[in-house]
Image 1 (cartoon, one colour):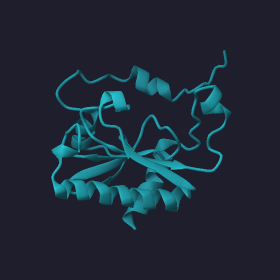
Image 2: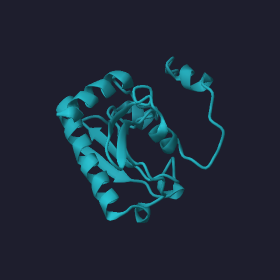
Image 3: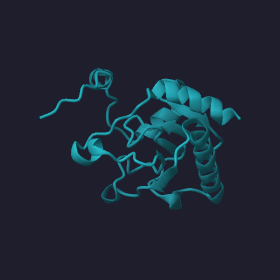
Image 4: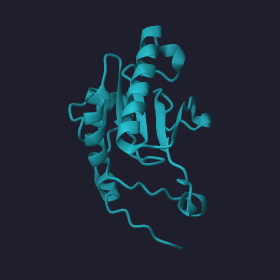
Length: 162
């Protein structure tokens, strides 16, 4: 068995966990005041964007409505438009900062569809590069994220201001 050391994970493992409740992780982040600690890169009128703490690929962002709803039917047309507009802004910021060759952008609605937080809709924006699928994710089922989340979040916040 190969061992991949990830010492930064110990902070998550040892951190106090909030008790289960009616609010999702995204609702708690939306109501929090520490955008830097939560890797929030933008806040708009009805939604916000943050880096995924457990990314599929470097730069994996999430765009989340403030309103907790499991699917698109829980949003007004205005909220839907805001969600897509912020998604586009995030894609543009990622293009500027990371220069990917393409993107996977989408929603996982329902646990069976792969939603990790099924009760709070969110859009995934995953930058992709030619050749970014290599032996690590294919054989070792391990992703290598080449940049610290805090560093990347700071760069993206600056790009979102433009």
